[in-house]
Amino acid sequence: MKTIFPELQHCPLRHRAMHQSRCIAIQMEEESVTFRQLDQWVDECCRIYREKGLKTGDRLLFITSKPLDTVVVALACLRSQWVFCPVNPAFPEDQRKGYADRTGARMAADSAGINFHQQLMQEQSLKPVKSLQPVKSLQPVNSLQPIEIFPDDIYDQVATSGTTGIPKAVAHSYKNHYFNALGSMEVLPLMYGDTWLLSLPVFHVGGLAIVMRCILAGATMVIFEQKLSLDEILAQKRITHLSVVNTQLFRLVRSGISLYDAGVRFILLGGGIASPLLVEAVKEQGICVLTTYGMTEMASQVCTGEPLFTEGGVTSGAVLPWREVKLSGQGEIMVRGETLAKGYYENGMVTSLRDSRGWFYTGDKGLWYGSQIQICGRMDNMMVSGGENIHPEEIEQALLTLPEIVQAVVVAAADSEFGMRPVAYVQTVDGTLNEPFTKERLAGKIAKFKVPVHIHLFPEQIAESGIKINRRFFQALLE
Image 1: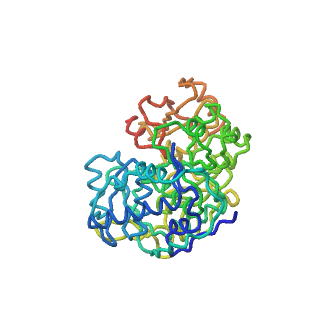
Image 2 (image 1 turned 30 degrees about the vertical axis):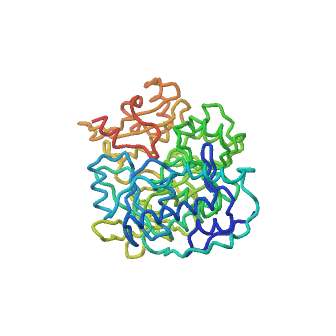
Image 3 (image 1 turned 90 degrees about the horizontal axis):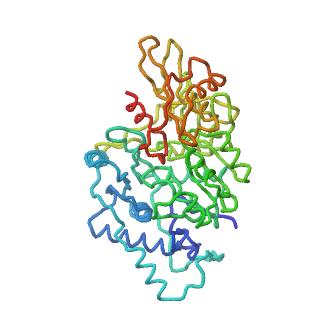
């Protein structure tokens, strides 16, 4: 079935409610939500917050770990011209307050104000439910009319990840998300009947991107409120599209579940790190694995494609439509295009990200391999050891080629003779490490001066489910 995308100036959810009224927008553990039901919830959320005094252009600080509430509020903000400012609920109170001041939020909330489960039960008790499967009829609902939105206005302010102190607030327009989703679907097909697990938090741009892709394509978001492992979720629901990082993919393969039999067809592998043995094992199941390079400032994806493994690491795909990428003379990645955010918001002003020619300097170092980009690390992560430049990411990728290593982080240790020396922290399959043997095998993969002076196991208490490596944590641990 060919997907008809909503026009840029129209609310995408209302478009789906009109054309796919009874199709499933959200699949939860026990219940299904149609596009029409979701559209009604969003209307109700708009009413609730208007009655609380929220006006056009106001900023709503939304602090919750409940994904369904967050999805509804995000879509209500788009429809009512409020600025959606999601916040990680794990932020300490002082950081949360500082971010509220930075975003200029007029109101803070932690709920959509709707008892979703009660409403679903009431609706189902009023009429018999023949099937929870999506229906194939896409006839427009005549009682509904399109809702005009303003795609160039600021729609959200999303905190940058991996920051210390108060995060920057990146201001996107809906137009940024629209073209991000359409460009993504050029290489990662998504359509009616597909299901994408909302495995990333919606306060992160990667989670918000999943919401936008599914609404625009008429696909189904799968939301689990229970804290289950990915293999447990796949055993319960058919998931066609997954966004994971290398550690999560390792756990899935180790669980023994057949990803193909569970319905998985596409895996988007983020975080800039990939194990070649792991990727090959998943591809042998008949699944398309795509690596990706993206950032909050570009509304999520910049490049995506089938990975190529090189001596220096792994590629992150080709440039997606509506984006441009080039390298500076120093090898820094520069980006521009329809998905580039409007700027950083603070004290009532938006500071543009663009130089005079529209380019944003990402701070990432890259190389071209044909049409694909390879990320070589952060410009500011590089250490100088005995006069030699060392990029931690190159060592991390070399460590990941060893079959027993699942995750790796390299940081710099001060050294009186060399200035800096690399130190590695690794997570292994069985929780053990033979440091001398690991160093010996690394010496055949990278230059001898790049082999870490020490290799340690990850500390037991560290969370393993992050979207990106928290390099600052390990640097502080070393120091």
